[in-house]
Image (cartoon, rainbow, N blue to C red):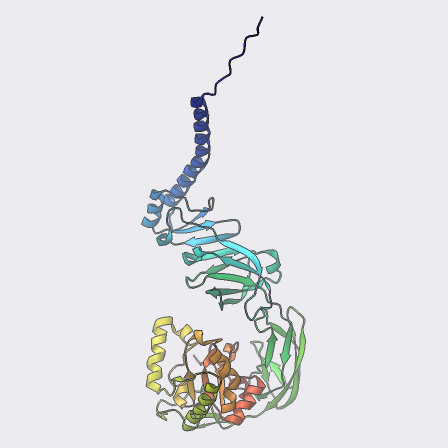
Length: 449
């Protein structure tokens, strides 16, 4: 007998489709249900909040909020703090949108910007930074050894700006208020390699400002302690060294972290400080700074002829090196300076204005011996013109009056455009010394109030 052939079982398309539908539905519910609970939790937290700051945990790469949740945030003007394992970001109500990306890129990288020796750093990089108000970052272990770091920002992936030097780290994290003009930030620790010292001369009774040069210049920690003071010096209540007697002495210091130790030779003299018609001269040099002012009626009316002629010579020689120089601001009267300073105070407040503008009567521009060249803002720093001026202006009798990293001595932030005429002989001496005019003459620059 012939065997009966078994009928081939046909695949039922409807059953396959049913299984696929159930599978898709299951996957959808797995994603949708947590999303529902997440939104409900956030909505209740915002609705019940009694203040306008609410912290939530980050669960998705995008801010997956219901429209009603977003509307509630905007209605109550809520500032939302989104917490991740590595960071917290602060978003204002006006910036919050449905399905907006909330990923912040954080990564370790060697710095390849000019002025850094490829230090390992922690970078923060995201287009979201332009919308975020504040970010709190948990730092990797290698950065928090000394509990102090530096924070820098990057403009257009090229220009570096210092946000905070010597930031004290607490609980292994730092907080940064963000600015929309920056494309990225990085946090680093720059180790000090050496301290160069010079012999200095100070005036009896004055504070001793040591002529220290840190290598590299942007070292994170520059703190030092006094190991030994010569008998002609004393420490005041602010731990500042005061020259109490004339003569020759030595001061030995030690860096607080690296244990680099240096000894500075100090000569204490009696500089001649005299006032003639309300004008201060130190060793016959006319001085105007935050300590020494000019009378309101002191009015040469224009730039000093010697200073102007020296500028013309400098401008001509600079043009041979393809450098174009011009005077952006020269002589300014007492009243002009008063109006200018008050406008800055109105804009930025007195504390900040005092870091970049002189009060009326305390401006070198009133002497007719100072001038601002080319561009009078931070964009001038690092330009070929600024570099040429710094390297060559002393040859024509000028000095950079407010050098970099000397703010605590001169009283003003770095101004590569501001030069002061002193004559060739004195300008060269000060240039060779590496000192500011205040350090060279052993004088202070501080307002009395």
